[in-house]
Image 1 (cartoon, rainbow, N blue to C red):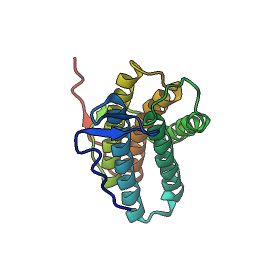
Image 2: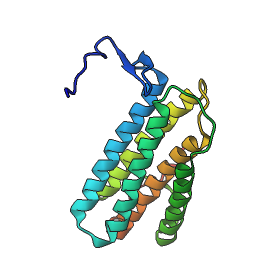
Image 3: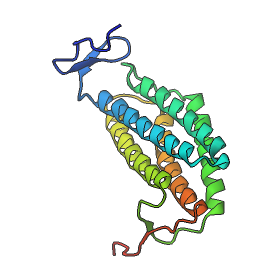
Length: 187
C-alpha cells in the first residue's frame, strides 16, 4: 500500500467515515493539534527513557496511556458526528491525572511566582507539551461552538495542561534543578 493517495492535493481530507472537508476545517485543526501534542509527548517519553532512571518506569507507562487517550480523543474529533456522551476511559484518566498532580504537588515547594520554562530537558519538554496542549484545547473550544462534543474532552485537555506543568516542576525538583522564576507580576 502506498502512503500517498493524492486525494488531498487540492486541500481536502477525509474524516473517519469518508466525509471530506478542507484541511483547515475546525475538526482537522483540533485533531491535528492533538496529533502534534502526541508527537511532543512521544519526545518527552524518549527523554525520560534516556535518563534511565528506574523511578520513571511508572511515569513513562502513564504517559504512554495518555498517548492512547489522545488517540481516542483524536478519533472522536475526526469523526463527522456529534455527541455529548461521556467517554468513560477519558473520565477515568482525568481522575488519575488529578491524583498524580496532587501527589507531585505534595513533594515540591509551593509556587509563589510564575515559573519560566526550562530546567532539565524532560522538564522543558513538559512545557512544550503544556503549551501545545493549551493550543489544542483552544482549537477544541472553537470546534465546540459548532458541534456537540463530550464535555470529558475539554476537561481532559484542561487537566492535561495542568499535569504537564506540575510534572515539569516535579522533574526539575527531583533533579535538583533550580526553577527559574519570573517575579514581575503583571501589576
